[in-house]
Length: 154
Image (tube, rainbow, N blue to C red; front, side, top):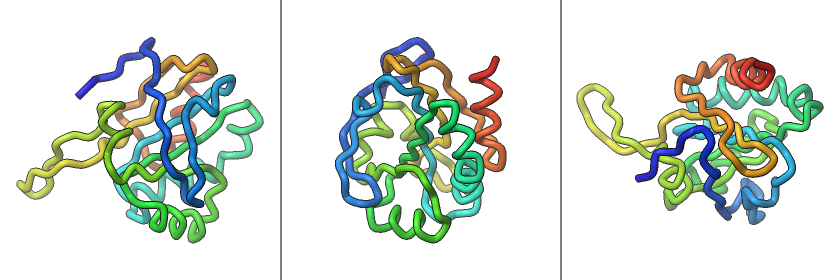
């Protein structure tokens, strides 16, 4: 599994969004992309993170940033999540774990002594030329968009 570093070229991907449309990272060249990986639709931490991006989406978009969420849930799950919380951005269905693997966020986790594979909550800020500008590995779910803005303005 590759571990991406700041300064690396972001791996391109092509996958389906919540509406069944094909989306590629390369479709967004020329924009700064906030690519955030989260474990599961409609769970407390993931909902807090998605709603924080939703609540600050207009200010992010006004700065020219594109928000894209990725989890290993399928299109149908994403569609329900987007509809329930009125999310204005794209969610990518990575149900075959190709994107999480290429970004190095499919990791062994441990809950109550049980080990399993899952997505590490991580945000990648990708520059308009497709380079990983910043990586946030300690995401504050309730303040994820502010973490991004603080880094982008630094």
